[in-house]
Image: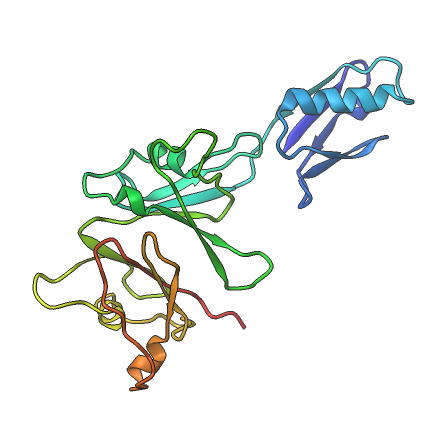
Length: 243
């Protein structure tokens, strides 16, 4: 929420909340886009538009009086698994968010960090964005600027993670002997919650495309449904069914 004041024009004093189109409405001039701008830039634009036909001199000040509850989440092998606040005027990247929650633990798989993002135009669908941690080639930046609702996932080198619509989400140890499959890992995580999309379980592995596993078919004995063996650092995500 922004407080906007124009010098010697008390009737124009406005407290405005940013709309879904990342703008605010101001008397006389209407919509002002504020996304990606700091308060100085917003004030300068309002002053320019007021002086362009409305007020001869309109020195303007803009201040933030309240930030909307915009947040992302950092999960996995980090010092503190918690939400991080996002503000409209300052970008926060995935790596910066990891630093903000205390950084990596010793067993973090730094080459396997990724961001899970909802696709706004596809209900229930997710996008998986790999994050490059450390130096990259000149001119290339593979860090990800976070959006509200994003989840930064930091896998462990020696474990797998099960997240989403399961009863006990978290990290699982890989057995010393034998192997662990997707369906067995979900069983160890307590099984599915209500509204889990059991035929669209997603196996996320660093350096590979996301693999969709029909666990419902596996549990029903469908011979065509493959139950992949897991590797250290894998993440299993169980999406929610949307009706």
